[in-house]
Structures are given as structure tokens and as C-alpha cells.
Length: 261
Image (cartoon, rainbow, N blue to C red; front, side, top):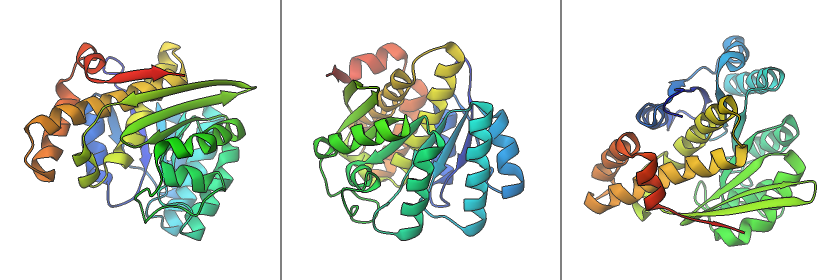
């Protein structure tokens, strides 16, 4: 991913744009925040990966998202759906559900969002999950089978599921630190990092499932390192960015526990 420096087109919510861009830059990717309807489609066609995050949608941005998704599909660009707080709000729930038919390469969500998007729950407490990751495993399998996407459910242990044609891969990634939940936008930025890894993996002929696992391992390993020296959320945010920048692949492998079912 660092060798190729993928260009990531982020259609994301206004609250998290800076940390999303910072995370991509620190990790070796290049961010672009292009969501105007007249530009989003053109940019999605030249990007390495696209993020569609529904966390704070405006009418104009939704038009841009539609254009970007259509363009990404035509160009074969992998795109990631981040269904922030689905279940509790009608617009974002409807949009995210409709976009399941538009070929996302990956879906990144917490447990409550995963269950709500699958239609088997009402969502969490705003952007926070009220369900355990393990409880979302059936919903993740269903979403993967329905959409063709790799589904990543984030929490204390991340679950990455791919379920196609009766064949399933399920990978648990254990890493991170509780302070990740105290810094705004860490999950949303992970969606963008997932798009970056997918773009790099596709360029190298690597597997989408492995790319999603790698993105979560990178973010989680950096969280583990940041938590060792941080006194609170402020210092943690800075340390997390620094760790994303400095960690080597060997460091990441030594900091995470990966279990395949």
C-alpha cells in the first residue's frame, strides 16, 4: 500500500474529514474530498478506491455519492460503504440499503450498524454500538452473501467476513485500544483506510478479504502502540497518527492476533 500510494476518493461526513485525510496520509495513501455532484463521478473513475460514508449527508452530497458509486462500478474501482448510524434514521438507512445492490467491495460498520443494515435490528445509540461483534456475525454473513462485499464488523475484536456461493471466510483481528472510541472519526477513517488497502490490493492482484484484514490490522496495531504512552484522548490521537506512519509490516504482524475460522 505504501509503495503504490493509492488515491482515495472520500465522500464522507463533515465531522471527520480532517482525521480521515490525516490517517490516509500517515498510512501512505493520498486523500481527496470530492463530493460535488458535477465532480464526484469523474473523480471516482480515476481514484484507486472510494469511500461512501453516510454519517452526515446533505442533499448535494447524496447526489455526489450516487454519481461516484455509478462511476466506480463502471470503472471497476473498489468502493467501501460505511453505514454510519443506520437503523435509527430513515434517509441513511434507505440509501445504505439501496446501495447494497450497487456492488460495494467492502462494508465497514460496528455491530449495531451491521445488524440494522441486514434488517434484523434497529441500530445502536447514535454512532455507538449496543451489540457485541459476535452477535453481528450472522448479519455480516447475510450482508456479504447479498451484496458480494467483504463485511468488516469493528469492535474490541474485529470480524471480517466474506460469504459467496456457499463458501465463507471469517477472520478475527484482535488489536487496538479502548481510547480509539474516545477520538472522533477513528472508525470513519478506518473506512477510508480500507478503501486504500483495497485499491492497493487490486493493483497487486491480491485478495479483497486480505486487504480488509490488513487495513484493520494496521489501524488496530497503531492503536495498541498509541495506548502505551497516551494519558488521554488528545495525546492518543497524535500518537495513533504517528504509529500509523512509523509501523512496519513486521511490527503490525507482531502486534495483532489474527484467527481464521
